[in-house]
Image (tube, rainbow, N blue to C red; front, top):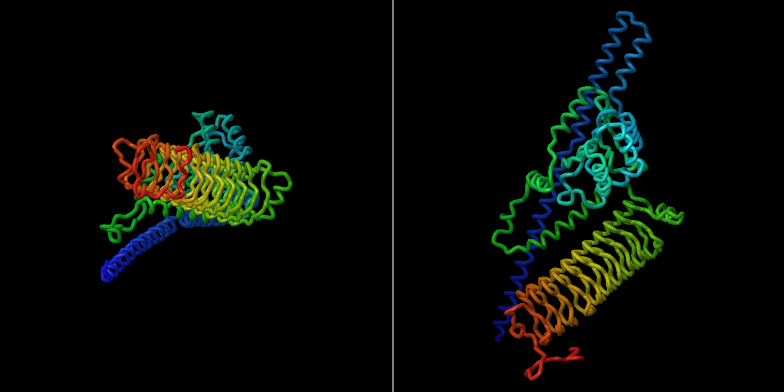
Length: 550
């Protein structure tokens, strides 16, 4: 090849690289614009300022009416005792309620005095509020013959409404709905409102998330309690006229309410990788959730004090950013639904810990002991699990997108339906691990150690790097291996039956007559070597291949 051809080839490669960078930059700009417009829309659509302004106007009207009546009473020389009684009666029509302990007290009072109907509207249903005490209060109220209607579900949580730590009390309420089908009703509204109506005599509305937060938090809240019949009536009418939605309608309304950027302005004519964009968006959602955590952060000192005093159930606790590196948290600790975003758990001992549905995105778990831990449905996006011991751990349906699992021990780990898109599993121990139906698109498994019992049945291994791996007898039946790199791999007796092998790289890979490929697929055309009696392999490079038992 001449020097001019080399220069032209180099220039072409640089132009292609610049075009790719331009596409990435345009996607990033489009993503930032969507995110900014979404936040701006959500800020402008807040209900609290308008509600508070309206209520304060009503309070002023009531005060004016009170002053007028006091003046009239004074003119006709009514006895002072009558005047004071009337003033007190009007004063209780509107009362400011500050902070969570006081709003919790109003909720408990309403459950105690309600005779006919109690309406509670709150976006999120969390165990921090809906504990055993509150569930018993619900039952006591229902046993008096009172009905309870709960409106729930935040539109912005699509498509995760009813899932994760924000809604971890939903199963308890659904169980209650089953026990009292004619009295206890759950209404999925897609709302950000917070209000309570007791019979036709009492209403509370404001910033309080009545069914989300505990009364132990120092978070500042404000609301108005009133027995103004017009306000009570309007709130009841608003609730009764609200449409109960399903998840598809929630998604449709969210999309309709967002002013999306016209992607054609930026991406027209480009073969955009939609799955990569979706992955980036899912990471944004994780960051948003950590910023909007509804419980105050618990200090490391307080958490360790409670742990050392024997407490083990920390369901839903907020330890975002906590430094627990090197700490021993064994002996049955329950951190399910906990918020551990960006926490430092490096070298921490969490053997057999319950981290079910916990949020561990961007968390440092390097060298942590997580043997037999329950990480089912946990959020581990961008987590650092370098050299972590996860042998025997339950990671079914966990989100490990972009996670660093280099040199991690995943022997006998359960990773069925887990999301491992673009995760690094370099030199990881994967003997006996189960990746059935897992998403490993773009994952890097170079240098990983597998066994005959490692399962990739129906897994997505598209664009994954499995080059040089010993995949002997490994089950990859029905797997998606489109554009995957299996060059120089050992495929002796491997099962790739009915797998998607479009664009697969098999240069230098070895297989034998016991290896199962899809019908009509010829591995020789992709550069693989068939090891069989009387087969000629001129110029074949088999150095470094394990040919034992061939």
